[in-house]
Amino acid sequence: MKKTDTVIIGQGIAGSLMAFLLHLHQIPFTVIDPACTNTSSRIAAGMFTPISGKRKTIHPKVPQQIPYAIEIYREIEKLLGSPLLHLNNIYQVYGSVTEKIDWTAKSVKADFAKYILTNPQVLPNLKQELGACEITCSGWVDCELLIAGFARWLKQNDALIEEKFLYEDLRIANAVMEYHGMEFNNIIFCEGYHAIHNPFFGNENIIPCKGNVLTIEYDGCTTDHIIKKSGIYIVPKGDNIFKAGSTYQWNNSNKEPDEAGKKLLENRLNEMLENKFTAIDHKAGIRPTTQNREVIARQHPRHAGMFMLNGLGARGVLQGPWWARQLMELYLG
Image (cartoon, rainbow, N blue to C red; front, side, top):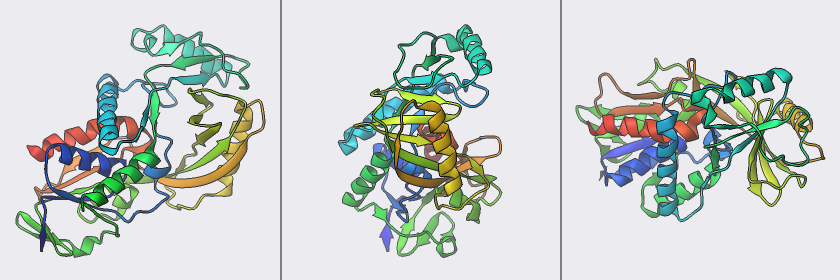
């Protein structure tokens, strides 16, 4: 019987962050993950911004979440020896007169002024008849590199089991749990939208939200900026390669890329880019979202050693580190 302190189910952004915090606290752990290649964490553009949503709001915790996220990702970079975090402003192209008025009105409000530049240097080869503004304190994390690099590090430390977790095989006896030859005291579920099948946290309202993402080649705009227009973003990957997305298909757990999602993105990109682009890859993933966009960071009401971190949704890269820390404090307490 192999003994450890904690088992983490899932090695997406949530599971990787919880594993990293356990590592910092020198707590033995093992991660169980099926190593699927098309999860939302692996295909996500990893973009973060202080101003989000259709209503262009600033979450009250953003002033805390941004610096803490930067700190954590820098520490993970040191651990993995790979550049993951890119601090680049967002070049927000106005998609309508109403949107321009809205952004301009926001820019003079005290809470928004430090995040919005109303007269940025104009980027070439973009359809921007109404102009653009720039959003500071933004950037992106190379999620594909983060997940793959962290998986390698886990394997090197004999802390990763690549298989599907079977809920029915978990045995709980007082403060000790057993699963496939392992004995442990704590388990943290970070299994993304698969939590809809979790029998222990069955009352959590996880809503699967499918997103299509394209990788495109576009040589008309050499920039480090993230570009957004009408809800679509393109994130620079270098060498004229951009990741572009994303679609939102609610209550959809079909992981296969679909032609309708691809066509929608291509149409929006044609409305954004002056010159022709080439789509070189098309992927889809399922985000774990909740009805009120509330993150699930909880301890089980009956099993003291059982926890869940889920529902990070489209803002997972930004709020993931902060909520992982909150759950870690609950775990330690």
